[in-house]
Amino acid sequence: MRAVILSIGDELISGKTVDTNSAYLARQLGSMGIETLAHWTLGDDQAAIAAALTAAAAVGDVVIVSGGLGPTADDLTRQGLAEAMGTGLVLDEQRLAEIEDFFRRRGREMIAANRIQAMIPAGAQAIPNKVGTAPGIAATVGGKSVYVMPGVPYEMEWMFSNAIAPLLPRQAGVILYRIVHTFGQGESDIGTAIADLMKRDRNPTVGTTVAGGLVSVRIISRGEDERQARSLASETIAAVRLRLGKLVVGVEEQTMASVVGDLLRARGASLSVAESCTGGMIGQLVTATPGASDYYLGGLVAYANQVKIRQLGVPEDLIGRHGAVSEPVAEAMANGCRAMFQSTYALSITGIAGPAGGSEDKPVGLVYIGLAGPAGTVVFRHVLPGIRDIVRLRASLTALNHLRLCLRDRA
Image (cartoon, rainbow, N blue to C red):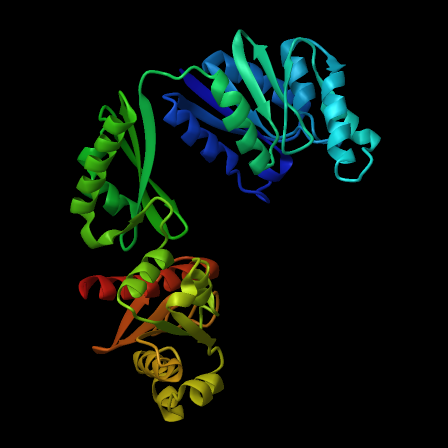
Protein backbone atom coordinates (compact mmCIF):
# COMPACT_ATOMS: atom_id res chain seq x y z
CA MET A 1 0.00 0.00 0.00
CA ARG A 2 1.22 3.46 -0.91
CA ALA A 3 0.04 6.77 0.52
CA VAL A 4 -0.02 10.36 -0.68
CA ILE A 5 0.11 13.02 2.03
CA LEU A 6 -1.46 16.43 1.44
CA SER A 7 -0.67 19.42 3.66
CA ILE A 8 -3.00 22.36 3.16
CA GLY A 9 -2.59 26.00 4.15
CA ASP A 10 -1.46 29.32 2.72
CA GLU A 11 0.97 29.63 5.64
CA LEU A 12 2.76 26.50 4.40
CA ILE A 13 3.25 27.50 0.77
CA SER A 14 4.27 31.03 1.83
CA GLY A 15 7.08 29.63 3.98
CA LYS A 16 5.79 31.30 7.15
CA THR A 17 5.10 27.92 8.75
CA VAL A 18 7.19 24.77 8.36
CA ASP A 19 5.24 21.61 7.53
CA THR A 20 6.08 19.12 10.29
CA ASN A 21 2.86 17.13 9.85
CA SER A 22 4.02 15.37 6.68
CA ALA A 23 7.20 14.13 8.36
CA TYR A 24 5.24 12.78 11.33
CA LEU A 25 2.69 11.05 9.11
CA ALA A 26 5.33 9.49 6.85
CA ARG A 27 7.11 8.01 9.88
CA GLN A 28 3.88 6.61 11.29
CA LEU A 29 2.79 5.15 7.96
CA GLY A 30 6.21 3.61 7.45
CA SER A 31 6.02 1.84 10.80
CA MET A 32 2.81 0.24 9.51
CA GLY A 33 4.45 -0.92 6.28
CA ILE A 34 2.73 1.78 4.21
CA GLU A 35 5.10 3.58 1.86
CA THR A 36 4.67 7.31 1.32
CA LEU A 37 4.68 8.00 -2.40
CA ALA A 38 4.58 11.81 -2.22
CA HIS A 39 4.09 14.88 -0.04
CA TRP A 40 2.05 17.64 -1.69
CA THR A 41 1.64 21.10 -0.21
CA LEU A 42 -1.32 23.24 -1.27
CA GLY A 43 -2.72 26.65 -0.50
CA ASP A 44 -6.23 27.38 0.72
CA ASP A 45 -7.89 27.16 -2.68
CA GLN A 46 -10.99 25.00 -3.16
CA ALA A 47 -10.41 24.10 -6.80
CA ALA A 48 -6.75 23.26 -6.19
CA ILE A 49 -7.66 21.08 -3.21
CA ALA A 50 -10.31 19.21 -5.22
CA ALA A 51 -7.89 18.65 -8.10
CA ALA A 52 -5.12 17.48 -5.77
CA LEU A 53 -7.42 15.02 -3.99
CA THR A 54 -8.50 13.55 -7.34
CA ALA A 55 -4.90 13.29 -8.56
CA ALA A 56 -3.68 11.80 -5.26
CA ALA A 57 -6.41 9.17 -5.31
CA ALA A 58 -5.38 8.24 -8.85
CA VAL A 59 -1.80 7.39 -7.85
CA GLY A 60 -2.02 6.38 -4.19
CA ASP A 61 -3.90 3.66 -2.33
CA VAL A 62 -4.80 5.99 0.53
CA VAL A 63 -4.74 9.79 0.86
CA ILE A 64 -3.90 11.43 4.19
CA VAL A 65 -4.71 15.15 4.53
CA SER A 66 -4.02 17.73 7.23
CA GLY A 67 -5.11 21.36 7.40
CA GLY A 68 -7.94 23.61 6.29
CA LEU A 69 -10.66 22.44 8.70
CA GLY A 70 -10.81 25.63 10.74
CA PRO A 71 -13.85 27.94 11.11
CA THR A 72 -12.68 30.86 8.97
CA ALA A 73 -13.37 31.75 5.35
CA ASP A 74 -9.94 30.59 4.17
CA ASP A 75 -10.43 27.04 5.51
CA LEU A 76 -11.67 25.29 2.38
CA THR A 77 -10.57 21.66 2.69
CA ARG A 78 -14.05 20.29 3.43
CA GLN A 79 -15.44 22.21 0.43
CA GLY A 80 -12.62 20.93 -1.79
CA LEU A 81 -13.27 17.38 -0.63
CA ALA A 82 -16.98 17.73 -1.39
CA GLU A 83 -16.14 19.01 -4.87
CA ALA A 84 -13.81 16.05 -5.50
CA MET A 85 -16.60 13.70 -4.35
CA GLY A 86 -19.16 15.44 -6.56
CA THR A 87 -21.43 16.24 -3.63
CA GLY A 88 -22.32 19.02 -1.20
CA LEU A 89 -21.90 19.71 2.51
CA VAL A 90 -24.42 18.58 5.11
CA LEU A 91 -24.69 19.38 8.81
CA ASP A 92 -23.68 16.64 11.23
CA GLU A 93 -25.88 17.35 14.25
CA GLN A 94 -23.86 15.13 16.58
CA ARG A 95 -20.61 16.88 15.68
CA LEU A 96 -22.30 20.27 16.16
CA ALA A 97 -23.40 19.25 19.65
CA GLU A 98 -19.84 18.12 20.46
CA ILE A 99 -18.39 21.44 19.29
CA GLU A 100 -20.95 23.39 21.34
CA ASP A 101 -20.10 21.25 24.37
CA PHE A 102 -16.37 21.85 23.80
CA PHE A 103 -16.92 25.59 24.24
CA ARG A 104 -19.45 25.19 27.05
CA ARG A 105 -17.00 23.17 29.15
CA ARG A 106 -14.56 26.03 28.84
CA GLY A 107 -17.05 28.64 29.90
CA ARG A 108 -17.47 30.07 26.41
CA GLU A 109 -20.32 30.31 23.95
CA MET A 110 -19.73 28.95 20.46
CA ILE A 111 -19.89 31.68 17.84
CA ALA A 112 -21.74 31.12 14.58
CA ALA A 113 -18.51 30.78 12.57
CA ASN A 114 -17.70 27.47 14.26
CA ARG A 115 -20.86 25.89 12.84
CA ILE A 116 -19.04 25.24 9.55
CA GLN A 117 -16.77 22.77 11.37
CA ALA A 118 -19.77 20.45 11.77
CA MET A 119 -20.39 20.44 8.02
CA ILE A 120 -19.06 17.43 6.12
CA PRO A 121 -19.49 16.18 2.55
CA ALA A 122 -22.58 14.07 2.01
CA GLY A 123 -21.60 10.42 2.08
CA ALA A 124 -18.53 11.02 4.27
CA GLN A 125 -18.15 10.23 7.96
CA ALA A 126 -16.97 12.60 10.67
CA ILE A 127 -14.01 11.61 12.83
CA PRO A 128 -14.34 12.76 16.47
CA ASN A 129 -11.77 15.25 17.76
CA LYS A 130 -11.28 14.90 21.50
CA VAL A 131 -8.62 17.62 21.74
CA GLY A 132 -10.03 20.38 19.53
CA THR A 133 -13.13 21.67 17.78
CA ALA A 134 -12.65 20.52 14.18
CA PRO A 135 -13.81 16.96 13.47
CA GLY A 136 -11.85 14.98 10.92
CA ILE A 137 -13.43 13.45 7.84
CA ALA A 138 -13.27 9.95 6.35
CA ALA A 139 -14.36 9.77 2.73
CA THR A 140 -13.85 8.02 -0.59
CA VAL A 141 -12.53 9.68 -3.75
CA GLY A 142 -12.03 7.67 -6.92
CA GLY A 143 -12.51 4.46 -4.98
CA LYS A 144 -9.65 5.33 -2.57
CA SER A 145 -9.88 6.10 1.14
CA VAL A 146 -9.26 9.71 2.12
CA TYR A 147 -8.71 10.81 5.72
CA VAL A 148 -8.71 14.51 6.59
CA MET A 149 -7.42 15.92 9.87
CA PRO A 150 -6.91 19.38 11.40
CA GLY A 151 -3.57 21.04 10.71
CA VAL A 152 -2.81 21.84 14.36
CA PRO A 153 -0.01 19.32 15.04
CA TYR A 154 -1.17 18.00 18.41
CA GLU A 155 -4.75 17.61 17.14
CA MET A 156 -3.53 15.89 13.98
CA GLU A 157 -1.27 13.52 15.92
CA TRP A 158 -4.02 12.59 18.38
CA MET A 159 -6.54 11.97 15.62
CA PHE A 160 -4.18 9.92 13.47
CA SER A 161 -2.96 7.65 16.27
CA ASN A 162 -6.35 7.21 17.96
CA ALA A 163 -8.86 7.26 15.11
CA ILE A 164 -7.22 6.79 11.72
CA ALA A 165 -4.29 4.41 12.24
CA PRO A 166 -6.62 1.68 13.57
CA LEU A 167 -8.59 1.91 10.30
CA LEU A 168 -5.57 1.42 8.06
CA PRO A 169 -4.58 -2.15 7.19
CA ARG A 170 -1.20 -3.02 8.57
CA GLN A 171 0.91 -4.16 5.64
CA ALA A 172 3.31 -7.04 5.57
CA GLY A 173 6.67 -5.53 6.42
CA VAL A 174 7.94 -2.35 8.01
CA ILE A 175 9.55 0.77 6.53
CA LEU A 176 11.99 2.67 8.77
CA TYR A 177 13.49 6.09 8.13
CA ARG A 178 16.89 6.90 9.64
CA ILE A 179 19.25 9.83 9.15
CA VAL A 180 22.96 10.40 9.74
CA HIS A 181 24.28 13.98 9.99
CA THR A 182 27.73 14.96 8.70
CA PHE A 183 29.80 18.13 8.68
CA GLY A 184 33.05 19.17 7.05
CA GLN A 185 32.61 18.10 3.41
CA GLY A 186 30.21 19.07 0.64
CA GLU A 187 27.30 16.96 -0.56
CA SER A 188 29.18 15.81 -3.67
CA ASP A 189 32.12 14.61 -1.55
CA ILE A 190 29.80 12.72 0.77
CA GLY A 191 27.95 11.24 -2.20
CA THR A 192 31.20 10.06 -3.77
CA ALA A 193 32.34 8.39 -0.56
CA ILE A 194 29.13 6.38 -0.21
CA ALA A 195 28.26 6.02 -3.91
CA ASP A 196 27.89 2.24 -3.79
CA LEU A 197 25.47 2.54 -0.87
CA MET A 198 23.28 4.88 -2.94
CA LYS A 199 22.41 2.40 -5.70
CA ARG A 200 18.66 2.63 -6.22
CA ASP A 201 18.12 -1.15 -6.32
CA ARG A 202 19.61 -1.53 -2.86
CA ASN A 203 17.78 -2.08 0.44
CA PRO A 204 18.08 0.17 2.37
CA THR A 205 17.93 3.02 -0.12
CA VAL A 206 20.28 5.90 0.66
CA GLY A 207 20.23 9.57 -0.32
CA THR A 208 21.65 12.90 0.84
CA THR A 209 20.14 16.21 1.91
CA VAL A 210 21.67 19.59 2.75
CA ALA A 211 19.96 21.61 5.48
CA GLY A 212 20.98 23.81 8.38
CA GLY A 213 24.63 23.73 7.39
CA LEU A 214 24.84 19.93 7.61
CA VAL A 215 24.89 17.24 4.93
CA SER A 216 22.58 14.45 6.06
CA VAL A 217 22.46 10.89 4.78
CA ARG A 218 18.89 9.56 4.53
CA ILE A 219 18.35 5.82 4.98
CA ILE A 220 15.06 4.09 4.15
CA SER A 221 15.01 0.48 5.29
CA ARG A 222 12.36 -2.12 4.40
CA GLY A 223 12.01 -5.40 6.25
CA GLU A 224 9.57 -8.21 6.90
CA ASP A 225 9.29 -6.94 10.48
CA GLU A 226 10.69 -4.11 12.59
CA ARG A 227 13.63 -6.20 13.79
CA GLN A 228 14.80 -6.95 10.26
CA ALA A 229 14.27 -3.35 9.12
CA ARG A 230 16.28 -2.04 12.08
CA SER A 231 19.03 -4.56 11.47
CA LEU A 232 19.36 -3.53 7.81
CA ALA A 233 19.34 0.15 8.75
CA SER A 234 21.98 -0.40 11.44
CA GLU A 235 24.25 -2.18 8.97
CA THR A 236 24.02 0.73 6.55
CA ILE A 237 24.58 3.30 9.31
CA ALA A 238 27.69 1.36 10.35
CA ALA A 239 28.90 1.40 6.72
CA VAL A 240 28.28 5.16 6.47
CA ARG A 241 30.20 5.74 9.71
CA LEU A 242 33.08 3.60 8.45
CA ARG A 243 33.31 5.52 5.16
CA LEU A 244 32.91 8.99 6.62
CA GLY A 245 34.66 8.63 9.97
CA LYS A 246 34.98 11.89 11.90
CA LEU A 247 32.71 13.67 9.42
CA VAL A 248 29.75 11.96 11.11
CA VAL A 249 28.29 14.28 13.74
CA GLY A 250 25.30 12.27 14.93
CA VAL A 251 22.04 10.59 14.02
CA GLU A 252 18.32 11.35 14.07
CA GLU A 253 17.51 14.36 16.30
CA GLN A 254 21.11 14.97 17.36
CA THR A 255 22.54 18.38 16.43
CA MET A 256 26.10 19.66 16.37
CA ALA A 257 25.45 21.52 19.62
CA SER A 258 23.79 18.58 21.37
CA VAL A 259 26.66 16.24 20.44
CA VAL A 260 29.22 18.75 21.72
CA GLY A 261 27.15 19.10 24.89
CA ASP A 262 27.08 15.34 25.44
CA LEU A 263 30.87 15.18 25.02
CA LEU A 264 31.41 18.04 27.46
CA ARG A 265 29.05 16.50 30.00
CA ALA A 266 30.72 13.08 29.72
CA ARG A 267 34.10 14.65 30.47
CA GLY A 268 32.88 16.92 33.24
CA ALA A 269 34.07 19.89 31.17
CA SER A 270 32.65 23.39 30.73
CA LEU A 271 32.50 25.85 27.84
CA SER A 272 32.44 29.60 27.30
CA VAL A 273 32.43 31.56 24.03
CA ALA A 274 33.62 34.96 22.80
CA GLU A 275 31.96 36.00 19.53
CA SER A 276 32.43 38.88 17.15
CA CYS A 277 31.06 38.32 13.63
CA THR A 278 28.59 35.64 14.74
CA GLY A 279 26.95 37.98 17.24
CA GLY A 280 25.99 35.34 19.80
CA MET A 281 24.94 32.60 17.38
CA ILE A 282 27.26 29.99 18.92
CA GLY A 283 25.73 30.64 22.32
CA GLN A 284 22.27 30.44 20.81
CA LEU A 285 22.99 27.05 19.23
CA VAL A 286 24.46 25.70 22.46
CA THR A 287 21.63 26.88 24.70
CA ALA A 288 18.95 25.55 22.32
CA THR A 289 19.82 22.12 23.74
CA PRO A 290 17.97 21.24 26.96
CA GLY A 291 20.35 20.79 29.86
CA ALA A 292 23.03 23.10 28.45
CA SER A 293 23.45 24.63 31.91
CA ASP A 294 25.32 21.45 32.85
CA TYR A 295 28.34 22.61 30.85
CA TYR A 296 27.77 26.06 29.33
CA LEU A 297 28.94 28.90 31.57
CA GLY A 298 28.24 31.86 29.31
CA GLY A 299 29.47 34.00 26.47
CA LEU A 300 30.44 37.51 25.45
CA VAL A 301 29.56 39.23 22.19
CA ALA A 302 32.70 41.32 21.64
CA TYR A 303 31.63 43.08 18.45
CA ALA A 304 33.52 46.33 18.95
CA ASN A 305 37.28 46.43 19.32
CA GLN A 306 37.01 48.28 22.63
CA VAL A 307 35.00 45.38 24.08
CA LYS A 308 37.67 42.95 22.94
CA ILE A 309 40.26 45.12 24.64
CA ARG A 310 38.43 45.97 27.88
CA GLN A 311 36.48 42.77 28.54
CA LEU A 312 38.69 40.08 27.05
CA GLY A 313 42.08 41.66 27.60
CA VAL A 314 43.10 41.64 23.94
CA PRO A 315 46.14 43.98 23.70
CA GLU A 316 45.26 47.14 21.79
CA ASP A 317 48.55 47.08 19.89
CA LEU A 318 47.77 43.51 18.77
CA ILE A 319 44.66 44.74 16.99
CA GLY A 320 46.64 47.69 15.64
CA ARG A 321 49.32 45.47 14.14
CA HIS A 322 47.21 42.57 12.84
CA GLY A 323 43.64 43.83 12.67
CA ALA A 324 40.63 42.55 14.57
CA VAL A 325 40.18 39.71 12.06
CA SER A 326 43.44 37.87 12.57
CA GLU A 327 44.95 34.79 14.13
CA PRO A 328 46.61 36.59 17.06
CA VAL A 329 43.37 38.35 18.01
CA ALA A 330 41.34 35.12 17.83
CA GLU A 331 43.93 33.48 20.10
CA ALA A 332 43.83 36.34 22.59
CA MET A 333 40.03 36.35 22.59
CA ALA A 334 39.90 32.62 23.38
CA ASN A 335 42.45 32.93 26.18
CA GLY A 336 40.69 35.95 27.63
CA CYS A 337 37.31 34.25 27.50
CA ARG A 338 38.59 31.11 29.21
CA ALA A 339 40.16 33.20 31.96
CA MET A 340 37.04 35.33 32.40
CA PHE A 341 34.66 32.41 32.80
CA GLN A 342 37.14 29.94 34.30
CA SER A 343 35.88 27.34 31.83
CA THR A 344 37.59 24.15 30.70
CA TYR A 345 37.28 25.21 27.06
CA ALA A 346 36.65 28.49 25.33
CA LEU A 347 35.78 29.23 21.71
CA SER A 348 36.41 32.56 20.03
CA ILE A 349 35.46 33.76 16.59
CA THR A 350 36.30 36.87 14.61
CA GLY A 351 35.70 37.38 10.91
CA ILE A 352 34.12 39.22 8.00
CA ALA A 353 30.56 38.04 7.39
CA GLY A 354 29.87 40.55 4.60
CA PRO A 355 28.48 41.68 2.37
CA ALA A 356 30.97 44.56 2.77
CA GLY A 357 34.24 44.87 4.65
CA GLY A 358 36.35 42.45 2.66
CA SER A 359 39.67 43.08 0.91
CA GLU A 360 42.12 41.14 -1.22
CA ASP A 361 44.03 40.01 1.84
CA LYS A 362 40.96 39.50 3.99
CA PRO A 363 38.00 38.49 1.80
CA VAL A 364 34.39 38.27 2.84
CA GLY A 365 33.86 34.91 4.53
CA LEU A 366 37.26 34.92 6.27
CA VAL A 367 36.96 33.76 9.89
CA TYR A 368 39.46 32.88 12.58
CA ILE A 369 38.32 30.46 15.26
CA GLY A 370 40.19 30.13 18.50
CA LEU A 371 39.95 27.08 20.75
CA ALA A 372 41.51 27.33 24.19
CA GLY A 373 41.68 24.33 26.49
CA PRO A 374 43.85 22.41 28.94
CA ALA A 375 46.28 21.45 26.16
CA GLY A 376 46.78 25.03 24.99
CA THR A 377 45.24 27.29 22.35
CA VAL A 378 44.94 26.69 18.64
CA VAL A 379 43.52 28.93 15.91
CA PHE A 380 41.85 27.77 12.70
CA ARG A 381 41.51 29.86 9.54
CA HIS A 382 38.58 29.40 7.16
CA VAL A 383 37.16 31.22 4.15
CA LEU A 384 33.49 30.31 4.08
CA PRO A 385 31.21 30.79 1.05
CA GLY A 386 27.72 32.23 1.06
CA ILE A 387 25.75 35.33 1.98
CA ARG A 388 26.05 36.95 5.39
CA ASP A 389 23.59 34.71 7.26
CA ILE A 390 25.10 31.56 5.76
CA VAL A 391 28.64 32.65 6.63
CA ARG A 392 27.60 33.30 10.23
CA LEU A 393 25.86 29.92 10.54
CA ARG A 394 28.71 28.01 8.92
CA ALA A 395 31.23 29.82 11.12
CA SER A 396 29.27 28.94 14.26
CA LEU A 397 28.95 25.29 13.28
CA THR A 398 32.60 25.13 12.26
CA ALA A 399 33.66 26.46 15.65
CA LEU A 400 31.56 23.86 17.45
CA ASN A 401 32.88 21.17 15.11
CA HIS A 402 36.48 22.00 16.03
CA LEU A 403 35.53 21.55 19.68
CA ARG A 404 33.70 18.30 18.85
CA LEU A 405 36.77 16.88 17.15
CA CYS A 406 39.00 17.99 20.03
CA LEU A 407 36.75 16.30 22.59
CA ARG A 408 36.38 13.23 20.38
CA ASP A 409 40.12 12.80 20.09
CA ARG A 410 40.51 13.07 23.86
CA ALA A 411 38.08 10.20 24.52
